[in-house]
Amino acid sequence: MPPVRRQDFVRKEMRMATLGNPGNTIAMIQKYQFVFQKKFGQNFLIDTHVLEKIIRAAEITDQDCVLEIGPGIGTMTQYLAEHARHVVAVEIDANLIPILGETLAEYSNVTVLNQDILKTDIQELVNTYNEGRPIKVTANLPYYITTPIIMGLFESQVPIDNITIMVQKEVAERMQAGPGSKDYGALSLAVQYYAEPYLVANVPPNCFIPRPGVGSAVIRLTRHKEPPVKTSDETLMFRLIRASFNQRRKTLQNGLNNSPEIPYTKEQILEAIESLGLPATVRGEALTLEQFAKLADKLAGIKQ
Image (cartoon, rainbow, N blue to C red; front, side, top):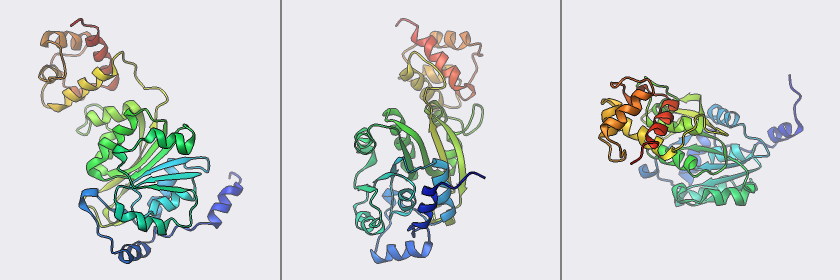
């Protein structure tokens, strides 16, 4: 058994987190007469076991700066603040700011920003609160905006160690799906190009207030230090991926030929596909990330 570090012991002694308790969450909502807004996809987590799993999976230490997207009333924020060096919580709903002012009053290592994460300069936050070093990201994301937020984080090239998020169960399954499965698609390939997905836990609706109509899951995306595949044209590779899944039932050749994003003739596309040893009838869902990278290289080498 590893020795107990003093800092871990002290943190347990000082634990102040109270909002994992459903009664405390309901009391806070009633005190401020808070009204849940559908447009923000608000479902507050009320299960301490799930909260602790998120903290463990994200591997939060007292050296970390954590960006939390959508803190709600501060439930997970309290847990994060007790483990991290600093927490920056970005909340879009102005009605939650007074509540966060109360629930996080005891924590001196939390900064709350009333902003839309899609319009926030995350690199500036990293520079301000973590001296440009990689941060960790946690979130209980509104399901309708999961993909734009995750892809925005990856594509911005902001230094990130890992992203540990609550998402719709179906989306988590798509993120880690492999070729040939029904869940495999453009999201699977994009996420796996930037990170290694790991399913932490499935979370039933009764772990939230109000209960969502679908199952949820916590997934950790550990950022690759280097992409797992090399390509001479990353932009073209992602265009090929999008085009091949936009018309999923068509062959890869026809899907690419029908896309306005792909400036090659049907003959050029077929030649590139067959040069990889793939049949003319292959569908996009059968290709691995590496094969999409090679296809991009083949097509990029054709003079227009």
